[in-house]
Image (cartoon, rainbow over all chains, first blue to last red; front, side, top):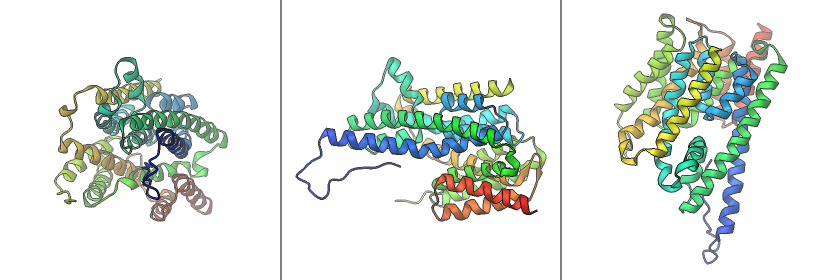
Length: 239
Length: 101
């Protein structure tokens, strides 16, 4: 999702700020539109899981971090308790905190701007910011991507939620089965080696083994923590 | 009402996590171990959520149309299909299996 411009054809003509600016904004809009696809799915799956259209939209406006939103509606849709859903969502949100650590020296925001910037800390805005060569471009990448994703994500959530509600019976449409596919699609790009693969397989196996014995939602949390503990013991390949 | 509370608590918690990252001194959390936990936690939770969505039905394990949908999703992802194709295609596969069965 990130892009870096390398002016290889003509090294003498260094691209000016204007050119960098246009490219960063264009990429930001592209990322926003791409994220809209996730927003459509989120809106549709949220209402399928029992949320109202207003609740689905409120989640997208206020929580505004896709993985956590999918986790909350996934756990609730599977019959889990809201508390288990909230804890799963917040555990997934921990990565945003680490993104913030990475971003804060580039953004150098204080006061009210920091309060606004915090809401836009996401996978996408972080990836676009850290891909830039200079801080000025990184700041533009962060803000432009954050805002583009915010607009597209929320519009798409509304369309997806209203559309799925209008279409009717989610079971007949197979929408409940699409939740697992959505989680798998979010997981897929993170399976980048032995450690993540083993962690994922352990998590899936433990979650299923615990399912008959605990209320819905709890197996996901316990499996997640067990798998991370196992994953940390797998030596990382030296690059 | 409970759902609204869950929506608001999740939102507040998510926001505070984001704000904490921008506010605390970098050295406090930026250890290699913390980085690995942050990378593995989404993998573990998303895998557990996937497994439960495909094979669990409340507190029982079940083999139904969702497994066919999951199979489609795996093939689509291996073929690098875009997100919407994966999700809509899986729904269509499940709907087709249910219509036949």
